[in-house]
Length: 287
Image (tube, rainbow, N blue to C red; front, side, top):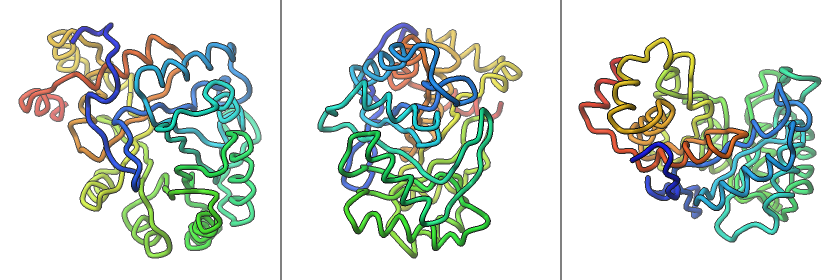
């Protein structure tokens, strides 16, 4: 596979979000906002172009959050893609508030989550959100109350499926005692494997695992030897090798790399066709 090819995202197969089938390269829409995930992007039309190109390439999962911008990412998604293709899954999140670039404050109060969800519905121009995720566990609010609020919204028909983000195995288990959960979104990559136990639980129980920040350029630079060698041998970029590693790590993993560049988007989607053999995987896992 040449690095400049742009095959559809379906090459790596699919995974289920409840009854919804998503292709195993999604798109994370955090980076279509301004610097520091704050405000408008330098080129709103460029951001809309990236979103439209993602769908053209076969991506059918777009992940966002009300806190990206705030509100900017969700609005741009609706501007670019509404009315949405029938198979497109829009996933969003609530549970953070922002006061400026780089600021993230947890707010898992039921009243806040309801307000956040209803705002996302309006901005995304949806009657029901396919996947609504608790963005983080708020240490000041019992997890049962936060998840219970999402269960109420699900019962009212405002969200189809519930997901969690930034949780450990015990928190996942506790949440699933309150409401059905179809996915977990944690920080995970070849360089950051603190969520191994969560990946295993998701795969074993049929949940999707959506790794955010799946590309860690600094780590790859520091450990570039085997990565560069394999990338050159495959006619691919190091970023594509990193994504291909995730796709082989577990069938439950659905990477959601984000970018504001059409070129990088096409490169990311093309990684779905990159085949890594067992020997190559062993070499990469060893660092």
